[in-house]
Image (tube, rainbow, N blue to C red; front, side, top):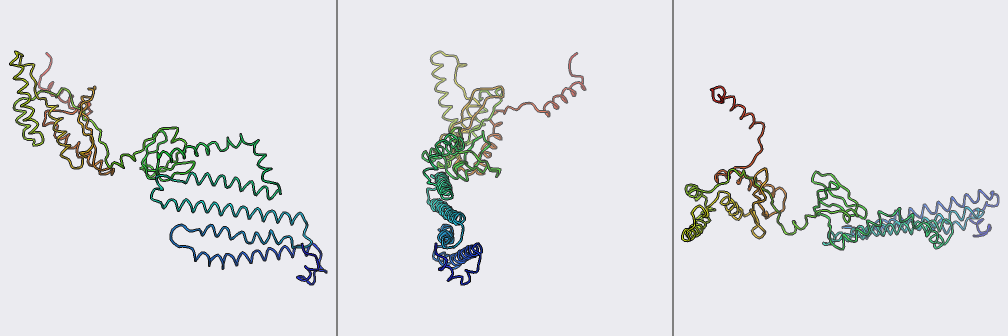
Length: 420
């Protein structure tokens, strides 16, 4: 502090003032200087400095703006000792609060620096594959914890180590409070290191009603935009503890699977006669198949007769087998069906609803609308051409079927057909 003679140079009439008024005027002058310097720094120096920074992309402007707040706080912290007749307790309080504000400003500037680092990293081409947002949030938590300890230590004029030594007793409480954070941190490390999830991936998690694209990967939550445009927030650790389906593999390969069955009425399955075979020769897709199959069966049956076998034991074409061959040929002729992936038409275990004939193939696109169109076109054709092979689809009786049966019975009674 300076003595009263030095201060009287600033206030020539200070000798006639009460000491408390002199202290108030000194504090007011100090705050006025701090406000004036703050205005100079932000309106002149800061604006000039911001013009020198790049305008495109992420800039350190928020960091510089935060650090500019340190200047008035430094004036208060250093200048409060020059105010005469100011009570020591009040001077100490102003000094400590100003220093605590400086620490808080530095913490906020470092927080802005972490945000800038994350934005710069997101401009990398591989940022979606390995996001660092979770790690940034962990650093922010540690930063604000350290800042809180330092601010309290400065205000209380105690050593930070003394405060940290008292946290040992609160370790159990802190573990309970930050349980989700610890679990999420471990989950984030596993998700990132194993490349299990990226922004833009289509994931499906029925347990949490999530079915859509990942739009954000944070420390505590993963945000999924469902196809109905709703947002589902999933705790990060749930992606490790629970199972989920990631469709990224399908998108990387560029194909999407079709796996659907036609349920054939088993009573419509039969052998093909000569007329049926001639009729089916009209289909160019199976003409070669029928010629080859007929020759193969004729040779097999001739050998059977030569060995004294009964012709009833011979091999014959069936409508279901011929239809299966037609479906395979039809799928292979489609340019929108991938020829490099598995293509199967197989029979599954017969059920009470008929014989499932499963079509298993891959479309040459992963675009949802195109995939559905290709799938619908395939089954439109197969459903329409099925009767040409003498086959019927199974369909449970509907109300219309029952009504038609009832009308048929009434018609029989009206013409006297029936019992008796």
